[in-house]
Length: 158
Image (cartoon, rainbow, N blue to C red; front, side, top):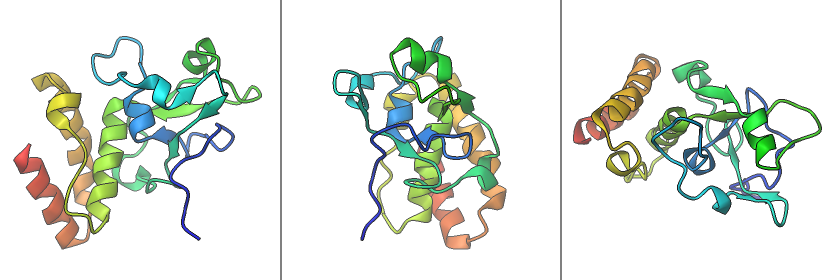
């Protein structure tokens, strides 16, 4: 049986298994100028169904690459939007970490195409630089030479 692509509730969300991928990219973080376009595609309050990808389940656990960078407590922000999980703390990747997780998932896969849209998602040079800093922090831990070359080729194309 294949692994589901999403969790449809927030029961397994934790600091280790934080929300990442497109649900995190599209979460409207306060003060952020990136992401936040399609929040309702991932958090449907009317039905009470969320559609989230979790690190360590649907995405690789990238803690070895990026440490805790960009993993933030969003309990209060989600609660303001009507989402909570029986008083437990909820964690999500910020836009930079979510994109870095998406890139790392691609790097570790056999896929030829990366679906991270750097120019669209990170339109300013400052936001691009912040994403590249996170990605570069993980490069020394990418021990497979072919995977490292794949990442470096993608980075140089951006």
